Length: 633
Image 1 (cartoon, rainbow, N blue to C red):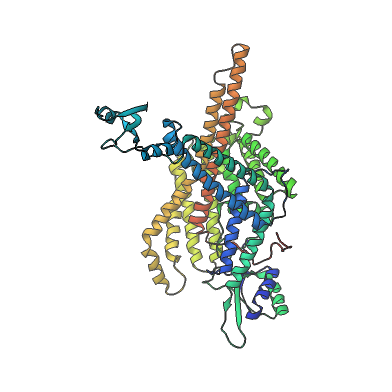
Image 2: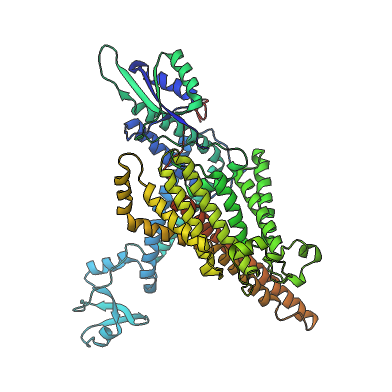
């Protein structure tokens, strides 16, 4: 659920601004309204924070050297030293590149001293180096004295004696000889290695820099709050104000702090134009979906819905249907438990992200077991105890059980229609899940809009959705379209047009406003029809994954294992490699499909198109002391 917020304004003496902010931070419940502010001190703190983050990112590439000498340097000094070393490394790397280019340019001339040629020229002996194309060299006359020193692929290089060659550019002499350039390259590489050693020795300071970062973030937050305090005018007594939002249940703590510190406190409900932060609070089970929201960066607006429970419920089903294979689920569960054990060893508890993956893995195992999907092995080859877990309606290799009579009558399925094949059943399930989730969305809208007449418009849209569901079944699953479906679609749209704009004022005028938007509404109805069909992706992606797995199985085992012992061993080894690669690739592709398709159905079709959510919120982050400063970090 989204926790209700109160808007709070605290008035304090400007003379006690910093002390009051310290007290307010100790209370730790007020989310201060963010404003665009700037100050020299804030700029310096942000610069230090950026350097510390850069230093931490750099040292993250180095393993801790347990033999390194521990120095008591503060985090700020470590960060500055790391940045200085990196700047030096960058400069040396640029010099090494330039030096390498110069070596490549002159190495074919051999090791000569450039200054010696300059001395000869000063003494009256002109020796001018050239690199000529084959065509230019062939065009030289006998009058030009040219000594060839070597030949390249399409060029000739040598020296002209006594005079320059007209129309040709002399070779630019290097500043240093080839041996000197090589010595410089060696020196630069030695210095680069020394920098790497120094960075490796500083790796153990990562925790120090982390502590510095935590402190800097608090200092930045405090400085932002201090600089963002509003001046309420100057007079004999200067007053300042801090505004923000606090959860409704924490107002008591603010009132006590105001009484103890002599602040004036104004508490009010957020106005329509206000944009309070969002604090979502759920039980331990529903909270499992929060790591996914954090990964996606989605926060519901304060006045939007908390869909954590429904999102978790449907996402588990989508994940299981896309992966589709119980063996994959067991692999994912094993990896999850291993990673979770590592986290538990460090922090003493399993993170919610680990618990979420464990739940998703278990759902995949259950779905795969019901379908008889174990590494896409043929049903006939499965052990008896795995066959016993299969639900006949979802596996075409199992003897079909009669389709439920009530559904058969309701859907008006002809006897000659394939209404009980595995593929038909899974597609039917996809569309049924679609209508359940989308109807759920409109029920939430109705509940939210009551007692407004606009709720009736949402009820009309819900009725129309049910009619569209039967239309989808008719078009894609060859189910006879029941007569009442057309009435559901028509009456639902009619109710929507009548009540969509009944927010007050003249009833007839509001109806006219609705019909003025006929085209957009009609297009939305078509979009809703497409949204139901969109859920077929669960079947399609799951089928694609199964087909890929079967293809790799055929590649690995299709040739059999006959032949000599050596041949059998070689074939078995190749089969193991193909199976390992193929199924690993399939797992990765399924994971991508979950992000593309499973997340999309929840965020776009369900939350976006039918709940109208824009995910326009931002998280509640109270002005609070996260880490008490203990001396110097």
